[in-house]
Length: 181
Image (cartoon, rainbow, N blue to C red; front, side, top):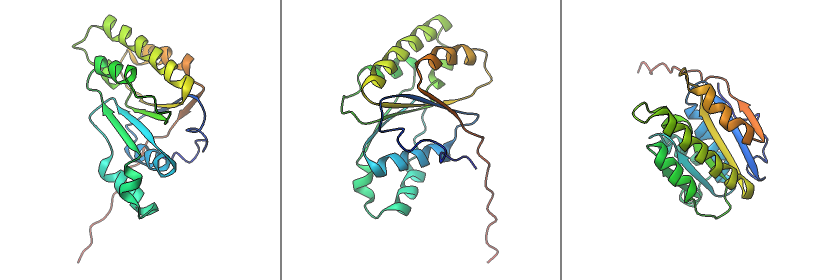
């Protein structure tokens, strides 16, 4: 099963940028990471896709504490449906000093409706914003490995900015047998 237990516990307490690469969307691992961080303090999540782990996150937190509402109030979020909106979200993040987690960072840059030159330009702009943000706080970027030809080019723009790179194993699907009675 995909686990973030191998990540350093002080990852969100230090400045800099970490990249977590995963072969799938790592939904459970994302929920686990978010729950771990907000149990210890605030977190700003920027989703590069439509997915945010609301239900699973609530379940994971409820197992750890009875102060569910107080813990969830430490979570701030924004969604970016295009690479333009992702750049705007990063450029306009409030400066509270809390760690930032960006889910599905490259997702919006795979949109074939936008010319590749524009997507590459916006990615360079986003990388500059990530560099700026990582100077003041912890930035964690989750990237799903994709079988598209731009993936390696996009990764080569991000890797020089990072302090740590982690690769997660694919999540195994857990099949639960329904009860007979």
